[in-house]
Image (spheres, rainbow over the protein chains, first blue to last red):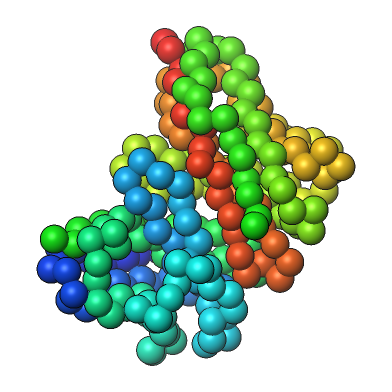
Length: 112
Length: 111
């Protein structure tokens, strides 16, 4: 059964550094999402992406964040200048247009 | 502000019992409703979707939707210890471009 994959599984970075989180969605999915989950808290919507452009973004998704699908398969989330409060699990998800989302295993981001 | 509310629990039920999980949402234009299961340290896994009023059954799971009351529920029959997890209610909005998750209800099924 096809799965969403995410790399790396754990990323440790220094405050102020840039990180890129990578996702390979399921091949027949059309809509892609990034979520974050701070330890012990709820899953928070960051951004949705369709047809190579952002469809919707939350108030969390400010200018330090960006997404792209550089080669038609990978889907990336870039955080330009990380802050301590960016420490969280970041999940990529995708669906075929019915909003029934399949999540990747997540990347744990630790900002020191 | 779109909100999805769940009782955080924990909800504890004995093995073989019915577990009942509830969720309310604030925005009447919500169009799609989902239940995800999240084991500790893992990603959410979709277990049920429901789009119209009424009941939808899939194996031991039944989702119930009442749009007039802005209420979604999940029943788990014959609960098993392996059902112990956090259950997330999620609500999708027009166009499917944004999904809001509740904080989740922790379920413990005692053997």
